[in-house]
Image (cartoon, rainbow, N blue to C red; front, side):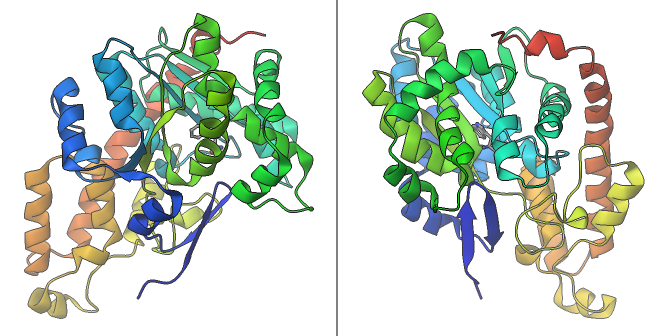
Length: 374
Ligand code: TRP
């Protein structure tokens, strides 16, 4: 049975019903027709698009109308640097990197050290600022093109951003902010102002280029209120386009309840975890297996509720044939959970080995990306 769920930019819990969310937020489902349209420009579709890991959007058809008329778009996404990054945080980055490659797009990457400072009671500004640069190593390790990518800390690039945020803030009333984000009289005013900061990169390129340039924001669906309620409402009033967006689902927690989350160490695989940690966590993951081997041989497993399967489906097995073969064998009781777990452990460890090497290298590359100088 589905329990309730709760989703705000600062809290996600419960079993999320994504089709309900499309209705609730008023976004559009990514349908076959749209996938065909994307494919026309990209050749092969990324498996995360084909499989509905990215399931919803705003104004992608408009964006492609513009594109097909020679008005190219740029990309914008971001990260709230409140701690180490885990695999779930990488999902939007995977598609952003793919889009950058396919469309040769410029990318603005916002590190919201301001937001995380005002939201997190236990973090100092020095800490969130430090995480901005530490998390940037993970972003760089994803392979973004330094010539086309600008990463910035809100705090350190405030001289540029604040001027633009003011224009948004002047048009955003407290009553709208309350309605969109559920703010109360207890909400600190830093967070209330911050909501304008997150709109800035959605028109910053248009400011710099002195002409309107469409913007596409890949992000996890919990960030939608910022764009639905602030950027898309206010940017037209300032003479800019509404940003388009493409939304992904959440990588689930390894232990089943809710999404992968840093606050529960065993639910999450961090980008800095070593091979043994990965092994331990995946070995303890929730599966659709039966109580005994015998029962599993007889009845087969249940991929539809299996977290290991979800990880393969969403992120780690891009080969459709291999994936469906695994599902069939599981359902027939021919393979056991241990087999899939080992398979996933190897996949994750191969990925992380490469990622950690690139992450190390990125320590020397920060200057190439942090180019938004005040
Ligand atoms: N608020 C986001 C977070 O807490 C960070 C962020 C800023 C972001 N701008 C964005 C995320 C644009 C996605 C797209 O993680």
